[in-house]
Length: 293
Image 1 (tube, one colour):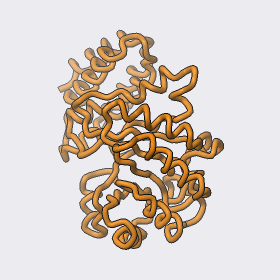
Image 2: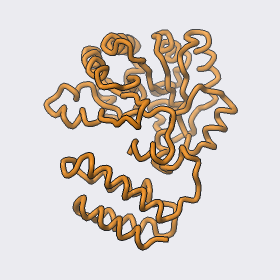
Image 3: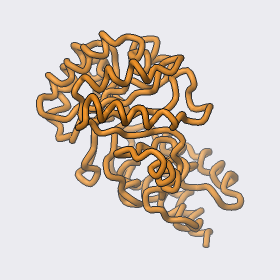
Image 4: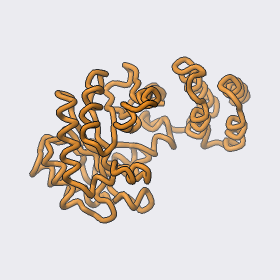
């Protein structure tokens, strides 16, 4: 998917899906390590990792430092319940001691690779005044802040009004740390709007790219044929990369990313979702593409 985004309109930097540090050294490590595969066209790309054991962060960052990534990002913001139960991701917001140990261990393992943090403004309450200064004192290269608490998930509007305070803290505590804002950014117009208001160094887009794969190109009015053709390219890239070795079910779900915003799109997606194997998916997509204008 990242390679497809690069071909449609490349952002300044890409991040991998977050990878559990415990998984890289587990019996099922082959599947986990696959998360860290990337191609040259994706550079610069940052490996995002999560967990709660500083020792595993050290081992993982040491391993990642051999793979050619441009940076390592520690996820301290995801509100996933499973991750929280293990003490990882946004649960770390409640444990500054552990956060410090994880950052330190990751730095030691990564050596000269830049370390960044992705977090939220708090766990269940707004903790900008205590949590953000703590992170800025850890001498990190970049700090991405999703402007909601963990318990808010993605429901209320992101609290962008907190960003001026965060930038002021950065200027005072760690001037070289890059501040990246995140939350409710679905178009480049959204990014320009918050940039004019708050002036972050950068902006991270997550869910927005799943709603519009052409987002970074600022292209509008994508016709049906181009949408199907793009999805077909994704299918063929998946086939070339994984063949039959990887479950194609997730690939089917990507049809919603491309096949949208035109009449009967949902009905056509239903045909795609009913396919039973990769070959069938490829054939039905070709057929639907040929029928579009």
